[in-house]
Amino acid sequence: MNLVCVHGNSLDSSIFDQIEIPFLQKIAINLPGHGGRAIGNNKSFLDLVNTVHDDLVGKKDLVLFGSSLGGHIMYHLLSRLNPLAIITISSPPLNLENVSKAFFPNPLGALLFQEEISEIDSLNLSHSMLHLKKGDAHKLSQMIQMTDPKVRGVIGQSLMRGEFLDEVELLTNFKGKKIFLTPTEEKFVNSDYIRSLSLGEVIEVDGGHILTQDNPKMINEILSRELGELRA
Figure 1 (spheres, rainbow, N blue to C red):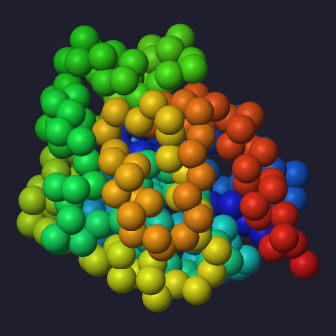
Figure 2: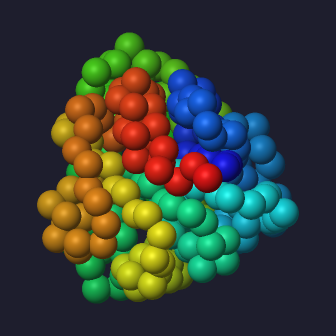
């Protein structure tokens, strides 16, 4: 089985470096404009979805694992990839009616939808994404600074134009295993909203928004336990 990992806005695939599940082959993808990957012709959120889809052509027995923005990309690929399971972190399923319920009004979160972010703001944003490993904030801040600023504008404009599909419907139609990981110290996403949807199993994990960086040991334990039953 292949564990497909997609990171969040303005980070990169290295947030999954400590995720290792013995019976899964990890495929960690850098989104366009992130981690040194060129933005190319990606001019909308759906372009990013299509690019990830193209990265996975020919791959089978997929388990989709997305953090924040990466989770939303995975929701959009459910019907196209027909995975065995989907696991997301801090990715509240959206439709046009519920965006305001899904997120807290945190001014730091708005930084991820503006092109230029100062070094001070990127460091403050990084601190807010962590709880157990505040010392990793400088690493996250460097990822933010290295991200192509244009991609943040692309994502923000797509959100404003309502280009996201109905993720609640996509998940309702998906019959595979669905797991939503919610951090105990989440500063951006309303975890109660995710629970209220009753779309799948919700597991609370000690840590901040970027759990794969903040508490990788617990994430490895949960994935090993929850996905072990999928082994042939």
